[in-house]
Image 1 (cartoon, rainbow, N blue to C red):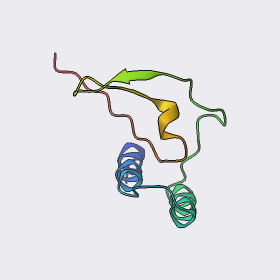
Image 2: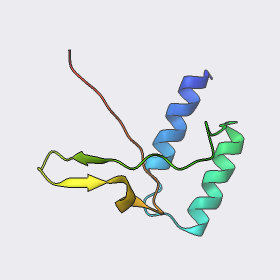
Image 3: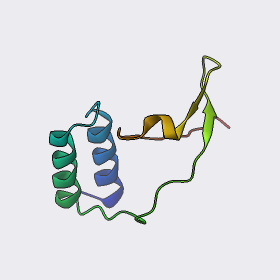
Image 4: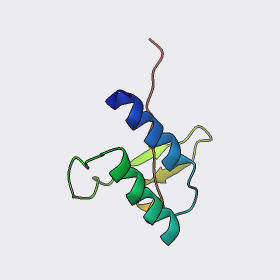
Length: 76
């Protein structure tokens, strides 16, 4: 399996975990080891906010303790 396919699979698995629990955290650690995923850095992501499709604003800090998958796309 290619590296990008592995990372995509991991992202799908993380997105399906739902609210973070100690079991989910242990499963995530196991998945990261299985797919040999190495975090790019061990520092927190910078704080930011995004405007949602419904017009409300959400901040990354609001998701503390939960898995977050950011998916940016564009149609050119």
